[in-house]
Image 1 (tube, helix red, strand yellow):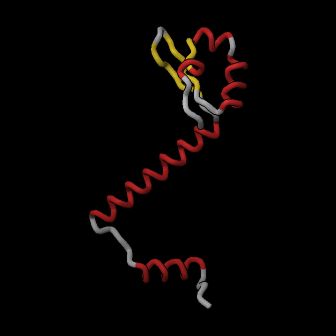
Image 2 (cartoon, helix red, strand yellow; image 1 turned 135 degrees about the vertical axis):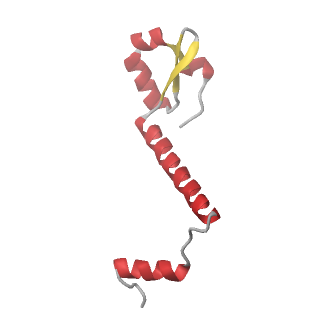
Image 3 (cartoon, helix red, strand yellow; image 1 turned 90 degrees about the vertical axis):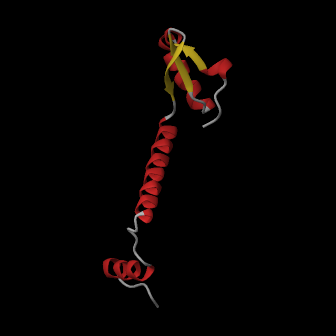
Length: 96
């Protein structure tokens, strides 16, 4: 996603309603978010589905990292050998 350009990417809701197809085509071509305002205040941000998916994936990754750090801090860890044995048992040994 490219950076927002305030002069081009902030639209009142009325303008968005009137030109929704054009705004969506521009969103896809420019790859920049569009801020929709209502009564002069930001009310929504329009992004591509691909950008939304990236945000969701990143959020899930960050949650998993935080959970792992919490587990580590309280001692919920598994040593390398145990992990190796469990993986070998579940998926078969890959040692040559």
